[in-house]
Amino acid sequence: MKRNFDKGEQGSGYLFAVGATVLWAGNMTLARGLSASIDPVALSFFRWTLACLAILPISFKHIVAGWPIIRKRLGYFSIVSFLGVTAFATLVYMAGRTTTALNLSLISITFPIFIILFSRIFLGERIGWLRSLGIALVLAGVVFLITKGRLSALASMSFAPGDALILLSSLSWAVYSLLLRKKPKELNLWAFQGATFVLGWVFLAPFYFFGPAISAPIDWNLTIILSILYVALMASLLAFIFWNRAVERLGASRAGILYYSMPLFSGLLAYLILGEDVGFIHLVSALLIVPGIAVANYSPPKKAR
Image 1: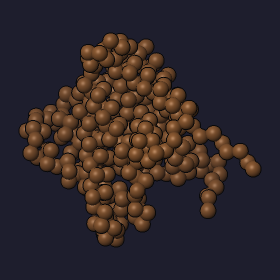
Image 2: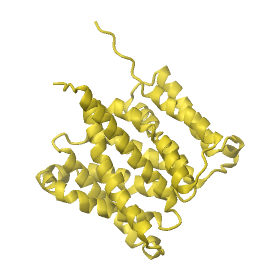
Image 3: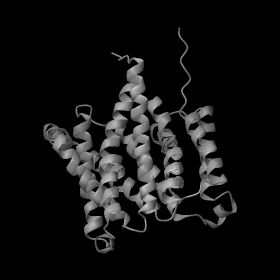
Image 4: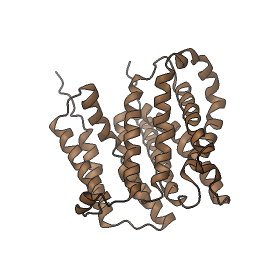
């Protein structure tokens, strides 16, 4: 049975969606701002350690109750956790070392396009002319952004490594999002999220303990500590709660449109906090990428019979 929401609940849904988007924009800004102060793998490790500690008191009983299902589909949970937790976040923080916060946001929101392409390749879903137009706009925007408007850079592959890494993280998130369609329906969100957080941390731990990150110097100060608390509790746990409340009240499509505003908030935060400039290249790229994603995900209303 479809649930109807009044205007007040829809209004709160928009607030939740904007709140989650702003929190994720802050994560992109910190990925750039902390790039010289802490190793990316270390930042990702501390983030998910604290996120696990925060979510387990709530999700532990749900994980225990759903453990037979989780154990039966451990391969599925391992892949989802690695892509959505281990790889995605770490690639974002690695990218932050060699590209701007606004580039991080602009390229990261392209993941719906990869979902469409992968759905066509692996699931045989049809791509119509409207989606094709949207994909073309997004690709043009990304190419313009990573080449800084110089298409000759493609021939020499001379663009920031961070742009390539954030594109890889978007690919990772797209596959993760596709796999969510196969999520066991018997598990509630707390069991699923708690299990993926913990498994993602398990996969991340060896990269931290047996890699160069553990010996990399960290300039521990109040800014570093508050930043780690932010990415763990605000950009992970609270943003997740906000987003699910938004989808609950608005539906995935409406909430998703607001997610595409993340570069706006990232650009503003990067300008205010990091002093990064928002230039002509960013504006042109945004005018191609954001409408392109909206067009690619547009579903015309069905005519009443």
